[in-house]
Length: 73
Image (cartoon, rainbow, N blue to C red; front, side):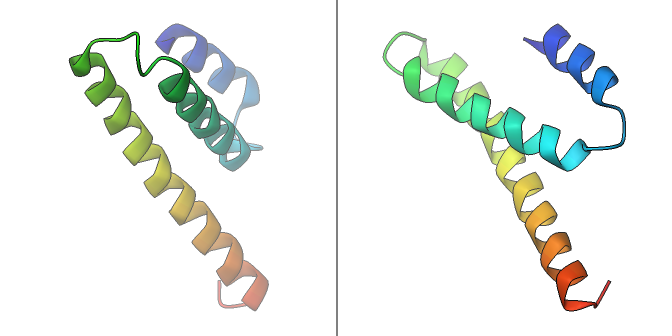
């Protein structure tokens, strides 16, 4: 999964990095839910850590967009 993530990140470039990050978060959430009964607990915990990082990224993106709309940034 890491190789695919890096390759798609290189294809996207800096143009739509927010969109790429949000789509990656959605993909992680779907994978986590579908594989919850099949993976070992340590793998689930690692996926949870990546999801937490993705949620923080999402909050930063949404905050930046709101501040841009309000004209603060």
